[in-house]
Length: 515
Image (tube, rainbow, N blue to C red; front, side, top):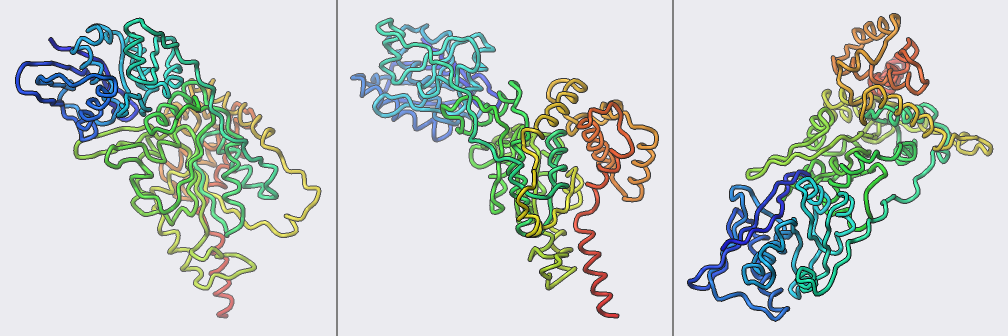
């Protein structure tokens, strides 16, 4: 007789049904696990043996074969421990053979029979709900499973408790739904003195879902501005929160904190490797760009990242997803993030500064900018020079800076306008070009200006549409039905070539000094 227990395999955040088939046969004692299992799954033999021993049971002196079907799908992870054990217990007639028929089972075994936490419970519970099944998972993951909806959830602390529950000896209560996870209190825009243009650019970025590159000398406040962007972003919608939480569940970062409702803010160091940034490694785990899904990816010291890491950003910036290709696996993760990058104008950081001189200007700035390819810069909607704030500006006693809550109110109204226009959670930055053309409603003089500027600035087709997207966002912030000439003018001002003014200034100075 073959005992069958249902579980899952992960393909990114997607789940695929896996059937654990257990059979006991007469013959020389053996314990074989087949079905393209990796070393982690193969090692489950000893964990199962020890867990049975802790309950006073022993492996039958028979030929045990456990098949993980479909056999051509790679199986990896410790969540196969519990379904294999439950199938073996059913084959040994310790529990009824049909006790697991209506459940999807996952959990890692400890040597003493405890059931340890595993990753991916939330997407697995959603998969079980779609199949009209219940789920058996570790107690530490029970609250996470409750977010999948009204379904039967058994979350035991140990194997003995699960056996007693199935036999009706004791009852395991359904876990309570976990609290919504909110991050620590966000920083406020009122902390930033001056930088009116940069604050305006961040407001546009927040309202339209655009990408931003800030360039300025050290200490100008680029990182300070970026760290306050989450304070003017609306909370995630239920659908977005579920998507983000599924990524965090696969990455093992959800814990018992509950659903993620605030937009992620990830800031990897510039020494981060390519797999750490885009995803990968032995088990093709999600990288920083996927952990920033529906949120912010802040990359400080932008040109200091490796060239391969920067160029790998081009595809997800355009498509909103990343495919991690390995010899034995191809995994696609969502990566619909907003890129906020910051950089110095040159290697030493003082190109164009009126108080400190760059010793190798203007070549220092040109060489530094060459680290960023044209196709990558073309995908960044707003490119902004952030000048240093004067000491006099910092010492103003009664300067009234606008608070984040006031900016958030305008951003929320603009986003609501976009959602009504496009539907779902689509913003101006992610709308298709064909839809954008109709939604933009460019006035005749605004269109003329945009076409003329695109020709003179030699904008690509992508750059042309990105200026149009930013113009539409500026109009939405003003609750304007159409895009006027001044909206296009402001959008174009954020598209000028970075560092051009500084380089021109330094070149003119040198020419003047040489007579």
